[in-house]
Image 1 (cartoon, rainbow, N blue to C red):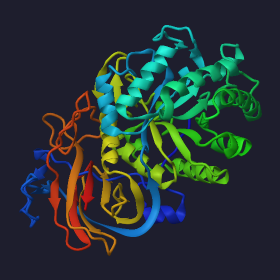
Image 2 (image 1 turned 180 degrees about the vertical axis):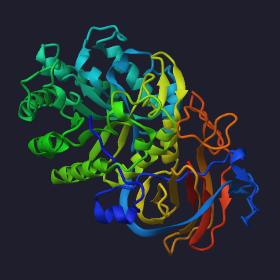
Image 3 (image 1 turned 135 degrees about the horizontal axis):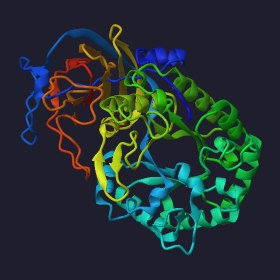
Image 4 (image 1 turned 90 degrees about the vertical axis):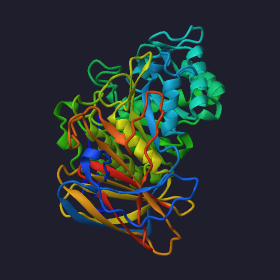
Length: 512
């Protein structure tokens, strides 16, 4: 599994200049009553009769540190529609989750979407296409499973990257013809919702002891076998959107050589996996610390994808490998990590991310028991805040926040509206943030929503908390229902505004 790290203290302008360390934090403002003293009301504009009255942002309790954020009109990247996706094991198709009757999961997908579902994982290479199967049978993928997936995707408004078995070729469990038959059926049923076909999963591991081709495996052997499967798939379904290689590591020695070998004539998207590091050594401090390896990996992928003129996507990522680390990957800290992961990947030229999901593994944003949805986990709130920021052009930023663990991102939509996302991971310092916007924009109002955590009886957030996360004082229900409180009003004076960013929180500022 890949392991990487980012520097959360560098500004966006510094990141673009150095391409060596990418900022890793964004700032949230908590809104729980226990966190604040009431501030003197500002001169917010009068609400229209059809809108609820906006209240000024309260003053956070505790020490306050002055900080500044300057946003330029210089484009630094793109956050496109469908960027924030989810990745599930393919064997999830044999459960009742990906069906039209799975109303709760559909609701949670709709809360984040529309986006891209990746069906892959280790179970891909142990799932055999069974054209006469009854469906919902472990180890098999049958037409009823694909039919149910198609109905789920239509209801959720999502698309799909669909992986097929390659490792099973070692024993004859699968063949190019069998893979071609599966994709032909999937393409008919999914239609335009099928946006990617992957062949195998993390194939660089097939030569490991106990795997499919122990001691007799190389990137050259993989490329030859992959070509056979691709040829059969495309012969049966010429329009099949082939992507790959879905490697977990070895970008320089596996993914990039693969891309150079197949070129854009064989794939439309370069795919790679990312995990923050080994679960065995995971800590919250490590999760929220600089992640320089990720910056390096993004840079390699960027130039590797550009060299063959295709985009790249990290279509499986998580806060630590092996399903994540209990007490780290499932904590409030993971919500703050996810926001940085999303925006830093967009700044690094990725076309999207798929967060590893499913079951009750620590890294999942949505927990389930393979039959019913148990509810969104802390990580989900980080994805949701980033999704609420919208899509568009990322602008260069220059953040000055002393030595605090803070990052900031600016996103401009097609209609010139701005979304600012700031994450403050410092445990004790609240920020009094002065913001300078790009000149020449016709903007007249600004509001702020906050992501924070507060356990019963506590007075401050805890990064280690497993619950108590809110976004603008609201939680997300297991069916995706979400009713946040009215945003706080900020006073916009020309190109300047100010706000507070409490410790261990983040804010989403919307400026129109």
